[in-house]
Image 1 (cartoon, rainbow over the protein chains, first blue to last red):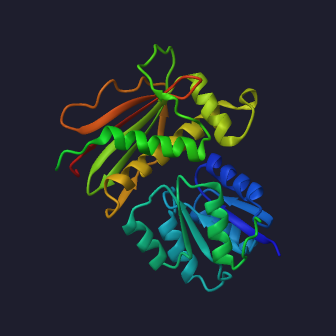
Image 2 (tube, rainbow over the protein chains, first blue to last red):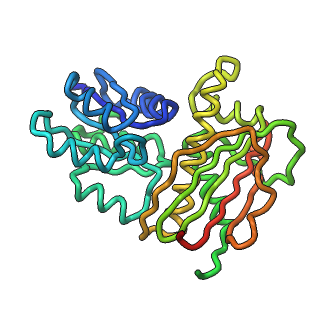
Length: 130
Length: 151
């Protein structure tokens, strides 16, 4: 089994970093899409439904919080787990994003295996990197 | 606002980011060295406290950081990629520092601004803060962090 992934982050450097981490971690990815903000992510999801979304919070136009609200409310889109990947590691922000429906939260900086472990947990894929 | 001991906390936050995401070892504190060119990324934050953080590096150090982060050869890096990586570095160190200072508060961090500016020599009067110069092998990374009451 492999997964279609959408990476949402306004930093191209960070998007490429996350893509590379997924490649080297052994998490099974069949296709990897990228978006620079929440608005672009919604457009991408209409054209390319995915299995899991990795989203930053602090982005221009539509930030991660707005994206999560809009995505969750849009019944035309395939329900998809969202994992937040953010520099904002404060407890209050984590609780807020989880309350909005995020299924996982990865604080930057993160160990490479942490991202894989959270994705395995969210997607129910035990020990994909072993 | 209680006085915070920010220097060790800032070093801890910067080292965690550099070693975990930039695969860059901090060799120790640097006494500083003259640089003809600095690239500085700055973020500001608002929340229970407000303030700013700058991350500044000379060209060689900035190239090293970009190369390590992007896993690309230094010679193949475009100037835009170095800017992006310095911007991400400032964002991450700021978030990491704030999570350590006040994990129960919510902050909004601005988008990084970049420019060929010299880093601050000290934190301006009226702010709490710290400046640290870190030896990362190919040069110095200077991080300055200032924190005050919300505007």
